[in-house]
Length: 185
Image 1: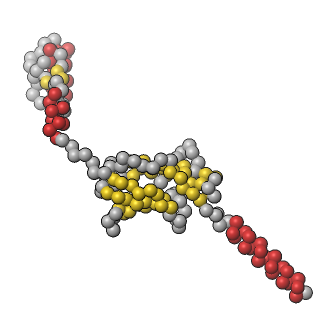
Image 2 (image 1 turned 90 degrees about the horizontal axis):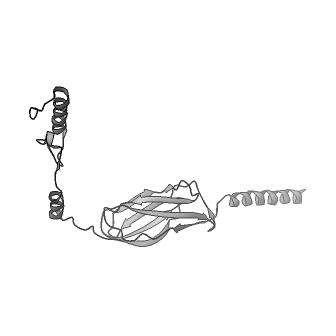
Image 3 (image 1 turned 90 degrees about the vertical axis):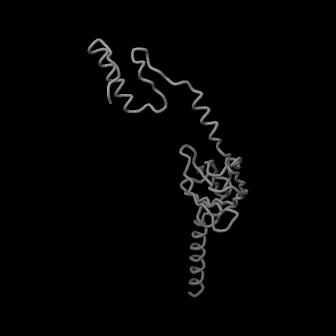
């Protein structure tokens, strides 16, 4: 009777251990679609990756966490990737890094095992030359309306006042048969 009790205990323990280990899930691999390049500070860039269970089967239904750490201590960013709608097991995220320099990062698909990714070198954005912008704006010819409302000049500051003047002029032209000049706003 004792041996039967021991045998049942061993079988029961084996079943419990086998069941719990098979539900553990094993391991997974995160594979980048492409290593991000040409990353600039304060400009968005995209990351696309797949999560494969046991390195083979694409695994959907996750919320992978992307953690980015700046080379100086204390500066980090955490972003959660979203699933790609038509591709099971694929995820994507839009990332904006605030500072130029070296950023280390990892992707954690399950919450306990972050997988390190290649270091990102983030460049400083090119300074905007405001004098070129002014030249571009002034180089464009102003837009004018037909001669019968030639007193109305439309430029980039076209606003509500100009719209009221145009409406008044059109009403005078078509309703009374003559144009008497600009309407007071």
